[in-house]
Amino acid sequence: MNKAFVTENDGADDDDEVPVAVRLPAGAKNYMTRRGYESLRRELDHLVRIERPKMVETVAWAASNGDRSENGDYIYGKKRLREIDRRIRFLIKRIESAEVVDPADQREIDQVFFGATVSIVDVDSDDDSEQIWQIVGVDEADAGAGRISWISPLARALLKAREGDVVRFMSPAGPREIEVVEIRYV
Image (cartoon, rainbow, N blue to C red; front, side, top):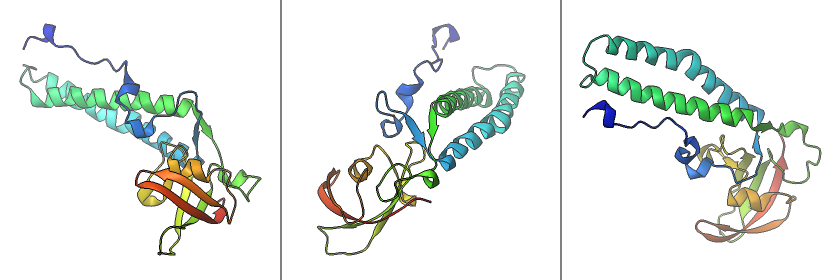
């Protein structure tokens, strides 16, 4: 197909491509822990210093081979370069809007706030095993590692709770009641 009739996304609608799970609510601050902030900085640095220059080199080499219309290295390289640039723009926006909160600086350690590590037990369940969750920023949430976003239903229910409180919330599986067993800030 003639390149005159092909349109490429210039990345103007970057936020439209961000999964809904990591979008911040309108007007909300982009809270994140120091660890999450440093992780985004490392990723940005890696993309800018290592990944992007390698891909630019690959695209330049592929372009020098002649006909670009059927050159897989060139076509894939350009696509990958757009993906890298989109991610770089996203990371820059997130880092610029970040409000870093250090959990160790929390003064009211008897209540659940951003950065707290909370041990809970499900009141409705026969299983008395504790679950441990740390409340973190949207970009650093990883349920498998025990980190949940501060905008998740569980985290919103836990905010401002104290040890011994029973909290009700609507989970994706239906209504749940949990008891706060322990609150730590590390």
